[in-house]
Structure formats: C-alpha cells, structure tokens
Length: 124
Length: 407
Image (cartoon, rainbow over all chains, first blue to last red; front, side, top):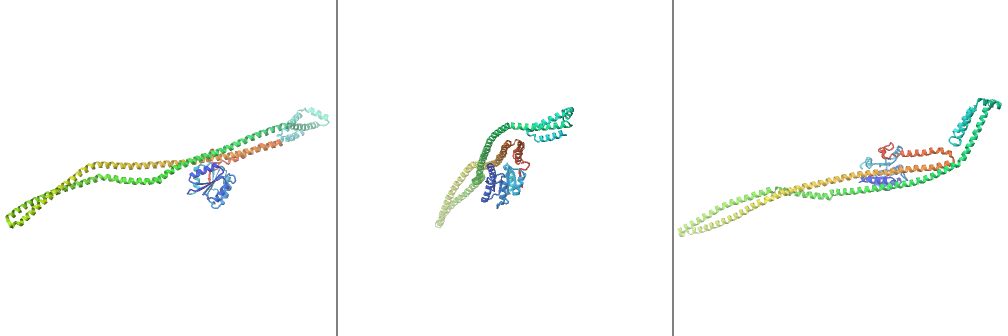
C-alpha cells in the first residue's frame, strides 16, 4: 500500500509540483495551503507517514506548524521536512529544536526529493 | 592674542554649520578681515595706537570690527536664507510632484508584476497538468501491456504452449512413422512366406487324396475277386473313394483360398510400399513445418517480451523526466517569493520618500539624515536576499549553507 505524505505550502505551483512528483514516485499525497489547514486535516483525517512543509506561509508558518504538529497524538515521531527558500542557519536551528527532521532549500529536484524521502521513511 | 582665539572659536562654530548654506559666507568674511589685519603695516597700527591713546587699542578696535562684521554677515546670510525660501518651497513642490508620478508609476509596475506572477503561476500549473496527463497516458499503455502479458495473454500463452506440446508429439510420431511402416511391411511379407509354406503342404494333401483313390480302386478290384466274401471290402472301397474325392476338393479349395489371400497381401504390400513413400515424404515435411512453427512462435514471444521491456524502460525514463520537470517548475514559486521581497523593499522605499518629503518641508537641515535612512533600507533588502540562495548560479549551496540537511 502506498505511503501517505502531507505537503503544506501556500504556493499552488509548489503543491502541484510536489503532488505530481510524489504520486508518480508511488506515494499518496494530502495537501494543505497553510499551517492552520494542515493541523485541521491532521486532527480529522488520516495520519500521514511523512510531512513536507514550507516555512513562510500566511495564517500559520512552518515553524509554528511543526511545533503544533509534534504535540498531536501519533505525530510525535513521524518525519517532518522543511522545504523553503530560506537557508539561514538560525531558522534551521529553530526548526530542528521544534522537531523538524530535515531542511531542504527550494527548488529541489524530484529525484533528490524521492531519495531523501526513502532515507527518512524506511520501506518507502 | 585675541585674533587666533576668536578666529578658532568662530571657525569651530561655523564648521558645525557648514551644511547650512546660510553660514557658508561668514567664515569667508572673517578670514578676509584677519588677512586684512595681518597685512596692515606696523606703522599704521602704531599710529592708530597713538591716536587712540594707548598701545593695543588698535588690535582691540580690529577685534570689535571683526565681531561686528561677523554679526552683520550672519544677519545678511539669514536674510538671504529667508529670501531664498520661496525658491526652496518651489523645489519641494516639484519634488512632491515628481514623487507623486513616481509612486503612480510604481503602482502600475507593481500591478503588472502581480499579473505577471499570476500568469507564470497559471502557466506553470497548466504545464504540470499537461505533463501529468502525458504520464497518465503512458502509464495506461504500460498497464495495458502488463495486463496483456500477465492476464489473458498468459492464458493464451498457456494454450499455445499446450498446442505446441501436442504438435511436438505429432511431430515425433510422424518422425517415427516411416520406421513403423517398414516394420509393418516386413510383417506382411512374413505372412506371404507363411502362405506359400501352407500352399506347399496342400500338395501333400492332394497326393494323399490321389493315393487314397488308387487304394480304393485296388480295394474294389480285390472285393470283386473275392465275390460274396469281399462285400465288406467293397463298402470300404467306396468310402475311401469318397474320402479321396472330398479331400481333393477341400485341398483345391484351400489352395485357391490361399492363393487369393496371398494375392491380397501381396497387392497390399505393393500399394503400401507405394503409398508409404509419399506419406513418409509428407511426414518429414510436416515434422519440419512443426519445428519451424514452434521456433517462429518462440521468437515471436521473445520479440514481444523485448518490446514490452523497452516500453517499460521508456516509461520509467519518462517518469524520471516528468519528476525533473516538476522540480524545475518550483522556480516559479522561488521567483514569486523573490519578487515579493522586492515589492516589500519598494514599499519601504516609497514610504521613506513620503517621510523624507515631510521632513524637508518642516526642516531642511533634517535632509542630512535621509541618505542614511535610505541606505538602511538597502541594507535590509540585501540582508533579506542573502537568506535565500536559490538561483541556478548557487546550485549545490544556499548562502553557504547546504541545500539538503538532515538533522
């Protein structure tokens, strides 16, 4: 059965790019346009095996979303990858402290993304 | 020493106000007076001291004149500033008008950039959708081929394989048919030989019949010679004659039957040999055809297997290419965010222009602070941009930090 990945980004281009790339790679994908919507889906819908989130988003950014998501039942240990144009170390450290699994800088090639996912998601 | 100290004080005071054109003329006037004082001949100063009544009064007078000149020139400068104000106000009005046009132009450019960002996003989404459709179509083809290979195709393959096995059995039978036919012919020829042997035995039977007939005749002669006493011999003689006749007839009948049988068998052998020759040729031909058919069929199966493998390989490559296209399309979002940051900086700059104009209208001297304020906006923009190393020129790194980092 295909593993489920949640993609959180306010850019329609990014959502479609990641959704298509991941589905072609054999994954099932859930999307959300910001942190608030993502938390709602996590609380009411099926739990994903991996989350990929942008950092700069309206309503609720990625850093805050990671902090909230880690407190939800069943989401304490699932991998969360930040995918953003930001690259400064202070933001990385903050995300790491709040429970992020990795930091990816946009744009990322489809093959690289699949490789990273297989690295953090054994059996994928 | 009044001159040097006074000059230093006044020069220092004026130096602090060099930025204001109102005071720029004062140091020049003071310097002229100082030079004039220095150039006065000593006899003139001494004469003046004499005229004033005591030494040093000439220098005191020069100092008083100097101070009076400074005050006079300062007032003159202030007056000039005041008289120049209408021109400055006119300049500010022009700046305000220019700023207004600039902001309107900026607004239009901003609208256009927003539209461009929207258009690139729409185009990017459309391209990705088209590419996805292409992939779906290719995947359907591969799935269809896979299903043909794994489902109905395999059933058909099994049936064909079974038919091939039967054909191979037929081929083997046909291959061995000539040998079998030769063996049958040999058996039939053995039968003919047996028939001939039986015919030879019938000659003996016929000879026995002839001897029996002769014996019956002799018996009949002896019975006639014996008269009444030979009556019983006469009966025996008749029976023997009858036996001889019957055995002769049976022998003849058997002989004819054997002849017919032999003829039938020999005819059968002759026709069998004639037919088996052409049948053997046909059998050999059929066997070769079956072998060729089996070989062709196996080649055909391998051909389609290879084609399917190639199509699957192409589809896998297509999936990789499409994933790459999806990755490249992310540049649209990167560019949009870069544009967004530029718009924020432009907004800050325009707000600054408003602020600067207000400041200059209230106090022209405050304009000195404006370049530093604008410089700060530039620095902030540079700092913000340095956090985003996203261009292809920065491939493999992002502002010195790795593009991919797992914690």
